[in-house]
Length: 303
Image (cartoon, rainbow, N blue to C red; front, top):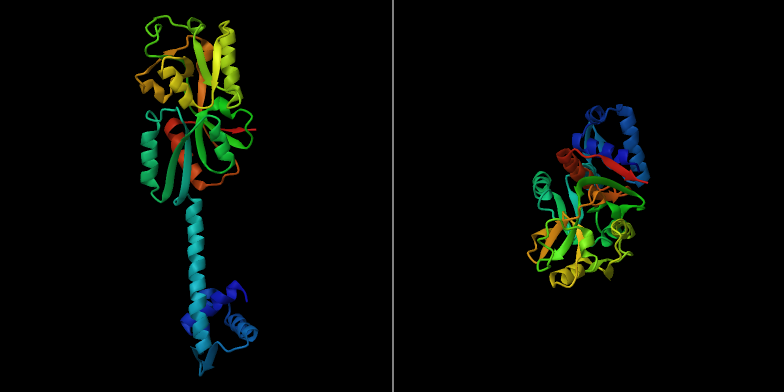
């Protein structure tokens, strides 16, 4: 039995007329009669009785009509739901933000507009460390991430959008003796204890900071941390200094002071949104189109 035969039978059952049903189905009356006869032959039972040019359903025909009607209604609803999902009007979107990134400047308005325009999309947001975010794209825990662009170098299967620039800064304890020095430069901290994320978390970031030290002729004492929270513990307790970005939430922390690094190499770095090319969640396209329209951005594929 074919899907078309289900539709043919339901239409005949509702019209109780082969002529009217054929007109609704845009087929000839003889062809429709043959289809119904084929169904009855296949099932081995009568479905429709023909009496003096009038039709009526047998008890079995009435039962099948009710069940087939449910099947067709479910099919129509499923198709409608699929089209709606492909347009992104319902579903879910999971966004991961870098744990130290300050979202207050850019994202509150966009997130509010997104939720207002697409209330059926379940939006979730999480914070994760620099090394964790790309991994959560690849294991499908997240749909979109926001992170430092250099952490995505050599990451296959990603599409990226650079949304902001950041400048690297020196991060000192508020009690540090050099926080008020007007012409503070990186070399002034050569004798301080630095605490930085270890190279296994982000090799490109490690190379970048190493190049800053090399440019300044520095060989500082460095201890390595696994996450930004650990770095902050050392800096806030006046036991170390570090390097961070001017987009960090820590600029609001009264226990630390951020000072720009007066080097050309310290500026012009990217804050980046990324997602997997193989992730066809339609809500990604909707969110990114909204973000790109707001910022007039350009999509870049990472090969």
